[in-house]
Image (cartoon, rainbow, N blue to C red):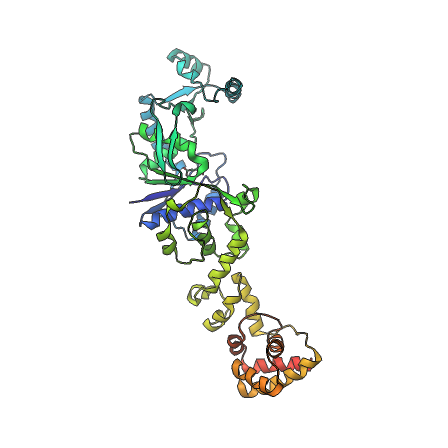
Length: 442
Ligand code: GLU
């Protein structure tokens, strides 16, 4: 069974790039009736905050990406300790004491010599007596994972194809700080093993982490999961934008974007599949395929999101939206109004047009007489728009715009809007007549 996970660090709220990663993991799991897990990566106690954990859960709920399980790293420290002991016993982690400044200097020296800025493993030369002396002086070590330079690192990435790394070109990663706290790299691998994660799908900024983590899986006697790294999301101008990094669900909610619009767009952005206003998540899941992902950055365009949002609203069934509509608004009214909506909130103003009172339209003297005639005719035709306009065409000789527009203006106070044949019955015959009379008398 496919098991995926979304693993945000609760050091801030989700931005659109995170939402995309979460969605893709959800789709990948759902495509094959698998499990989608939420893993809260909160080993960084100083920067993690409970309010962000709650905001992440709330955003996923709003998006309808319900996790099949939730774990948090801060509750799993004993498990990391056990795995770490195993790595210690196997000689795959080692103690180091270099300060950040010393490491920085080493990097500069290496670069100055035209060498890759890889950690030189000086600490491997320390003896037990050296360590004892450091400990006696009150100095605690941080720990690095010992990469196996003899083992070539190769994987077939779900998006990028065959990936090869030479371990000797990578620094042994620091996995544990001197205060005993964990860096992201190792706990993530321990969790992926423990939670049976079969597919790790994340941004391409993690590609070199994967190289290192593959060796960690092996060191823990576990088979690595399938890895896939998707190209990053960029703004419509084609650049990694700051704005994108701060666009989150709150922003979209406030802009009147339906979660389903965001889901439909992000599901296919950056793939060779067409971005379409698809409301059915099963359809999105069934067509989700990593092989369709391109290597080029995916461009996120808020205008495109707005268009998808409108298209979804235009097809949204009454039953799915009834509890968010103004009181008293029935299916007929919804069906009449929805083709005019860009955002659901706009329904209020159209409903106000139906219910009245409407703002007085500017009517020319010539049209007043015409509207007076309409007020008389409507007594016979009632709310049958076709009958009303046919009768007026005959009695006044008007046609086209001069026939229709003054009626719309008198009846709605506006030049455009929902289809009049469906709108007129919603306004009702008596109210419509009163509006026509009102416009006729100015
Ligand atoms: N907490 C990590 C991040 O947010 C998780 C990366 C991963 O998916 O392994 O970047």
